[in-house]
Length: 440
Ligand code: SF4
Ligand code: SF4
Image (cartoon, rainbow, N blue to C red):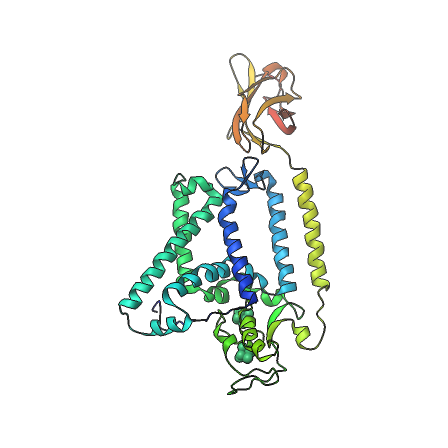
């Protein structure tokens, strides 16, 4: 299959002008700006948003979350999922047409570059169908070069959220980070040059769930079927459709909205602007508009209905749990494990020793803390542990050795390890093992 011709049916959609498209431009550019600027913003010295995978830390809004905060991260993911369900139930595929990175980058980068270098849809279509001459080759080369630069910039930006913005852009991040930049950039190029609307139609799982997430009261772009399609008419009479084809020519998904609701439609409203631009000068209202199936059938849209109320209740409940969780977020995280493969040892001085691995994480986003380790519940215990000083968000695993005179140790004895800094104390339960009978 050729990249620019052959069995793949390419969509050469035309420019659409109107209020929705102006809103698209503004919102799209703002979203891209936010994506590029956010990794450079820090709050109280911590990134606004960063996923530090090697250290298993998440920085969000200046706070540090570690593996033990998994439930907070799960709550956030659940809220995002239910918010998407709620948006779909209320506004149909508004996410697809207005907020999805696929649409935003295709419209705000790829389409702008393509139009500037190769011209509008019809011109591109004619050139693509023609022979490979110098004009076609230099334009394709220039377009691919510009998109390649943009895809690398996008890859670097996405990886800024993992490796840190200054590290990645000054080439001080690790080789794996740059391999990921390469993979992301290559993925974006395949999408931008080949998949495009096919990704929405055939690959996106969200698109597959649409029919389950929406109902007859969900917002969609609809053609007013009370207006007959007057084929061959030069202009519209009585505000009916005069088959100018503009709404079809501007559709990035290559569909005809006049055929009724179609799963491919991403609610982008390009056809609404197109129809408005031909009907308004004739003194008529647009025949293609945002509506709902209920409205199209003469009813009144119900925004508050069981499924939207249920989503609202779930999101509220999860939101309260998340806020409480953040509020109760513990500034110190500890865990204690017996050293792998060890039980106890009896030395020549007649002492029984147990060795543990103690992990301490300083979750305080603002302060470096020194930590004191103590033991409660073991008589005459000798505690050997290195002093611990941890920077904000830093975690460290250290050996903790406890020794008890053999004649005082007998079998298994429960005790507690306490870890204390200037602001907080954490405790963890453990067991000291010794030979039965108290003798080594
Ligand atoms: S039919 Fe209209 S709203 Fe739907 S994808 Fe095409 S242009 Fe966008
Ligand atoms: S733009 Fe409006 S008038 Fe023209 S074909 Fe589409 S629906 Fe009919």
